[in-house]
Length: 303
Image (cartoon, rainbow, N blue to C red; front, side):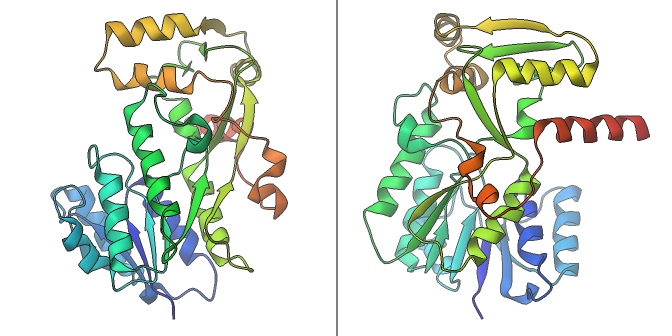
């Protein structure tokens, strides 16, 4: 009768909830989701849908509530899974982790659904990544709460966001970060949700461990080839080398996207061999980039 609290009902939070509810023997009454009191119709509809699935709703504000406030909420749960991202502002992930530890939660999956912060370390060029390293130090500095860090790489959909600037399908452009030989790992939120549920259910139990998953891992040159195949024509290929990316950050110090470009322009820590991941070892099929692009084309055709 283990109880679970998912923090956040955004894209990833909903995917994790779906993954947790997928097994036939799952009990939605043991699952809760923490969200802010709804202020939009979309948020109200999300809560309504969750309640129809018999998922309990807990209201709190991760950005403004104190560590003590959050700990009082978390103490009722055996497992807490943080799916909130960085929307709470600087320091929020440290605060959530402090509250989890103070509450004595048995098992915690922090918001680490990204790169390998052990390898990247501090000073990557992206300030929020430094906080991720702090969270790992907090978890490793204690033994009462067991933790699972799930490294996923970048969200697949984010890679193809024109605002991110690496791939622009409409314009037929691919911009490589650092080198055409640099690698990148990506996973869809749906895949992360299914695999998070599988990792939590695994026997023997996974604890105090970094688990790697991947929908796909490729070099930027391979990414451009995949986009060529998708569009049926050669894309415009541009290399944004390190000096260019550093100069862009210096000229635009408050631009978060340019900081991400520099942070991802590395030859380690942002990509790992798909064959050694949890999903590969367990034989779990996930969505790679060609499949994601094919589904995108099918959806556009239907529209």
